[in-house]
Image (cartoon, rainbow, N blue to C red):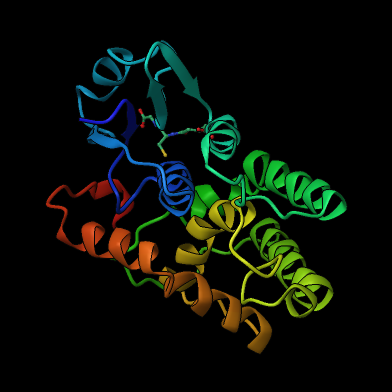
Length: 219
Ligand SMILES: N[C@@H](CCC(=O)N[C@@H](CS)C(=O)NCC(=O)O)C(=O)O
């Protein structure tokens, strides 16, 4: 048994759980997992057993409880041995933090109309102008980071090596994949880099193996 526990939702459907889990795994933290099936009659009551906010992920570390995925990732960054899951350069770190906050707070139309469903394969026909604007902002961030930092810092991720920013984009990457969002080569290379991360493959396999199905998220 570990002294860290991550309380999460279904691997197929829970974007914020993926972000926290991927950050913890990449940081080399050992932790136990508790999965609470989302959108069931008992979901809220089950989550409230761990914290009063009624949302997952929740991280428990001894007598410390951390909630909200961005705070959880920051906490993990402090726990990790060499704190290498933010870019090492402070200027880069400031940009990566700003972008992570933007992702954490935003893209709500896309989240609503193209919800995470790793096993699913749907068309992006639900796109409204607002969703397209969010897609454009996401791809602009990916392109700009890859052009400015990717090559200079070496590595296939937004700041070269994997960072918390990539963990925030990981669910959106799966959503682009599920809904076959049309993107150019630079963005496709980034999508491939995220999806072929070994921890991402572990999560994806678990999402496929998971028996729970949320009908309202299946089109
Ligand atoms: N802002 C929160 C959002 C967490 C959130 O919305 N989690 C969803 C699952 S991905 C949830 O717990 N939903 C509760 C429910 O479906 O009842 C964070 O970043 O952690």
